Length: 237
Image 1 (cartoon, rainbow, N blue to C red):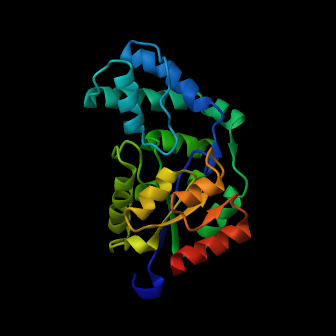
Image 2 (tube, rainbow, N blue to C red):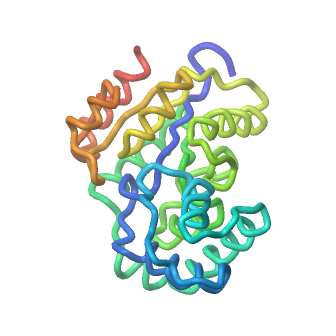
């Protein structure tokens, strides 16, 4: 794949970009944390835009527990099991955000666009969430990056590019990668690595806050026509 036929890698955030879980994530965390750590979860760290490894690190530290690889692995496994147990409830309580299904289906029909995710969720929790809402069929998790791959979100851009390069047997230039997310952390991950970014104000951050973070393209929702124009614009920069 060279020249005009080279793949564009579109990497979606999950929570508050593709879906809303409406409290299910916190519920699972409150259930599994004491099982693994032996202490009740007194306070949930801020989660917006952070990787699961970073959230775990702060949660353990704030409960006077030394973060270790062993505890990270146990918490990751417990979270996956916890989400599997409530997958039906997640589908009932949560929702797919407006415009998402059309956006995913539209890009899936374009041979030059390849979709994955770049998310703070662990790989297994990401899979469970996407399958619960039937979004997994449009997203290639083998060319994605997750919150248990690295603690720092910008590093996930490199990881996803490397996985995509192995998948397609050709390098993926960073300027052919676009992140779509709802937090300043998504914007920073893109800008600090040279990737493109489309921010969506579908989470807790406003259009103005996402613009202030450095995003040149911010959408209030994933309206199909506006999303298409934004995608064309960022790839022409």
